[in-house]
Image 1 (cartoon, helix red, strand yellow):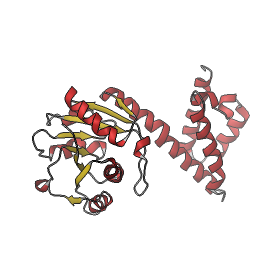
Image 2 (tube, rainbow, N blue to C red):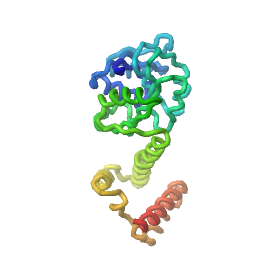
Image 3 (cartoon, rainbow, N blue to C red):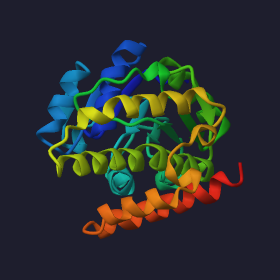
Image 4 (tube, helix red, strand yellow):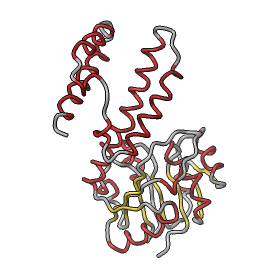
Length: 259
């Protein structure tokens, strides 16, 4: 069975990215079903389709992509009544396949990428991690996913949870540290633009190296205690950031000794 007719369930950042990507993939985006009456129509318009918030008016499709927050997957799935033979798939990294146990044909299509409203993403470069309830459903989901990306990998719920954790560490935490750097500069009237070349070079080196650990620099990896103490003094009035600084310095020192 080919999964050509698709309904997106949700109107968040992942749903928006899918609405942008699906029409170009050759799939038919039949509808966006979303309870958010502000974002729902906007996401549908991006995909050139219609929107509804009424579960009784859910369009008939082959695949229902549940692209909502991790904590909402179970609740939203429970509200859906799908046609016989349809596949229900969620896109969450930390939610097990069993969250869709009400559906005989169920799957996960997890895109390991950060998504932001209003920002287009090239789905062809996004790794997609797949899981399904049975071999036939997996094969159908794999054929569908190949329309979006050539980077497809099988991953059960446990492995997908590890991927999600690694993504949080490498993306969400790092971005929070960018923001901490921005606030630190702003206290002295210094611009964030001063950090942009440093951020770009750090990311470029990490991607080019065999391992990011091989290109770690800074006072912690050198064991430069006088510099570490000066930094701690500057953070005396920022106890949370000081705690993070101490933990990260310890982590860098201890892991660098094992390389």
